Length: 344
Image 1 (cartoon, helix red, strand yellow):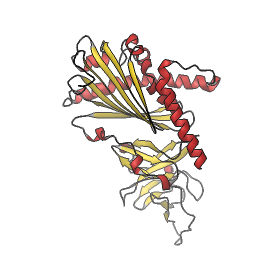
Image 2: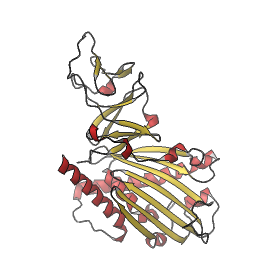
Image 3: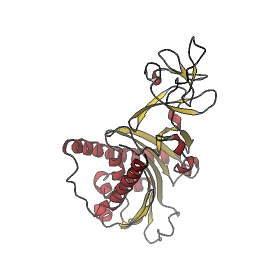
C-alpha cells in the first residue's frame, strides 16, 4: 500500500510535548511522547500489549509512557519497564517502536524495518535553522485525499494560474508557455520553470516593489516518497535572473511534507520562509497568510478530486504535456514500491 522503508515527516517538533500525541501514519496508529528521563522522543504502536488499549489515553511519567488502563509503563523503545504490583516483567511485554529523528524542526519517523533506518537518508533542510536569512512559519493540514494527489498537484504548476488567481498565480498564458527543464534522479526529480517577461502576481506585488514585467522562477526538488523542496521568486526583467537570483526581488522557500494517513487521507506539512524584508516580522506573517490561503485552495480542489476518483476510478484519465514531471514522479514511486516488494 505504502513504501515502508522510508523516512516520513510525522510532526513539527513543537507538536510533541509531554502529553501523548497520537497520529496515524501509513495506516498505522502511532503515539509519540517525550521521555522525561532521556529527553528522547519515542514513537510506539498506539496499542498496549496487555489489553489492546490505545496508549495515547495514558500519560507520560518519569519512566516513559504509562497506559491509562492498568498502569503498565513503556520506554521510548517499546520495552515495558514497570507493571504495578508485579516485579517480574515478561519478555513479551513490549510494543512495537519506530525509529525517530528530530532534525531541522521536523520529527521524522521510519515506518519499515528498523535495521534499514539510516538517518543519512533524511532530507536536509538547513533553511529552518537560519531564522535571520529565512524567517518562517509553518502549518499542517489533515487532507481528505491520497497523499500522492498532493504530490501530483506540486508537480504540475500550470494549475497556479487557475486555482490561485488572487495570490501566487499570475497570467495563464505565462504558465502555459513557461520554459521547463526536468532532471530525473534515482530518488525523485528536479525541475525548474522560467516565466520570462511576466506580470508579477498579487502576492509578489504585496511583498516588494517590482517592475511591470519580471522574470520568475519555480525550482522544485521531489524526494520520494513525500518531500518537495521549493524555491520560488522573481526579479525585474533584464537583470539576468538565470545567473542572479540572489539579488533583491521577491523570493520564498517552501518545505512540503506529504505523509499518508490512510489510502484516502493524509497530512500536509508546510513551511513558508521569506527571502525579503527579513528584519520585518510582519512580512513573514503576511507571506504566511498568502500561502495559507493558496494552499487551502489546493486542499479544496484535491479533496473534491479524491471524492470523484473514489466514485469513478481513474483508469480513463488523460495525460497532457504539463504532466511531464508528474509522470516521472509516479514512475519513481512505482519503481521504489516494486523494489521493496521484491526484497520483502
